[in-house]
Length: 365
Ligand code: PMP
Image (cartoon, rainbow, N blue to C red; front, top):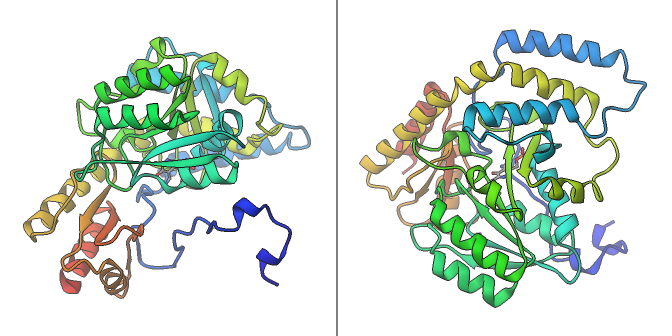
């Protein structure tokens, strides 16, 4: 039976599910994961922590994940110098996707709208539509930066309830100036909208890139989302989080499912945070491979977008990105066609993985 024969919501009929291919290949460079697995000391500690948590699995976990949120506040204070954030400013869920869904459940919904500036992370739109929130496609410039005046005009015209900014942006790797975020916050305040800055890739940004976290004290309607899936190399654990005014977190309590974050997930995340030095120690190696990809593709004469993330977005000579994607895959290297004509995205891997990609690309061009 076709699922469309079922009595699903009419507004879901036109949607297609999120579908980054999960193909078993030697070089998976398509979902912006960290190529380095957790270090052995962390694996051993995780086993201990999970064993301990398992002894009380007959009980529900801490519904508010209080200890984890404290640890996340400490991480942000240490790594991002965002002092003054406490457990009351932090919230965590199963991946930042769930965090985003909770935000849309509270601030979006039927009769409401959200705007994002595309190309950007496709799940912003998909989660908006799944929560019956109207989606407005704002545009980026040709170089994928955001023009503050045009963003303000779009916000004033569409009067959205939620504004999404992604910095560094996926799939382009483009980071945003704080001045642009400030301008958007002002326009959003004018129409009473919440502003979500998705900083999933922030740890990979080049030195000097400011985080929107620094704007939180003056902006009670700002939400900054982060994840442990990328720099922290914990995509399989499904932990994302946000920082915001405590009132935002109180609002999220209205929609979160009771006990949404399992005791095992909380234990794993807290354990990983105790190994933050080793985990983030991989970031420089990943950034070096990212910069190598940018340099080598530029030397090959391909148009390459400067990147502050752990991936690179590049132009395909002749514009046939589907053909090139397939030829690179024939060499065992899985990269990403996000559906933008003439463009492909590749995640920075380890040095050998990146070499495999570069060789495959050269042979496929
Ligand atoms: N935000 C952005 C910009 C992303 O690219 C991703 C993952 N691809 C996410 C959020 C969601 O990540 P997770 O749910 O694993 O935290």
